[in-house]
Image (cartoon, rainbow, N blue to C red):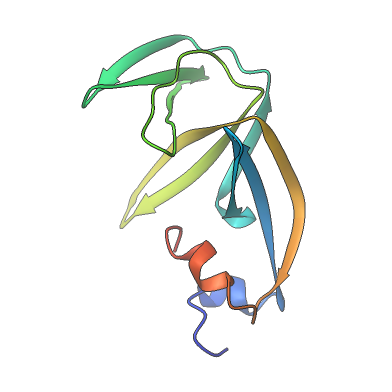
Length: 125
């Protein structure tokens, strides 16, 4: 692989990257499908909290409370059409957070040598 920074466990599996495209407030952005834990339709927020002056929604799923944050640093005022739950890990710690979405397309594929792959995956590996 050239300059693509996919983990070996992922890059060795396929020559293509599956992506989920989220549209929020008219702005599309892509997330690698390997970072998506779940896509919820018509979510119902359990409560709201404020952090650094931003209103963040919280979803209670089982024993987890998942923050739903606006990717553009705005406030979450009402439930969106969808919430895309993202996984993240740092060293031995694992967590979940959500992005609101007006529209979700979860069936997009990009060749792993496409120049946009590095940009799409940089925040998730």
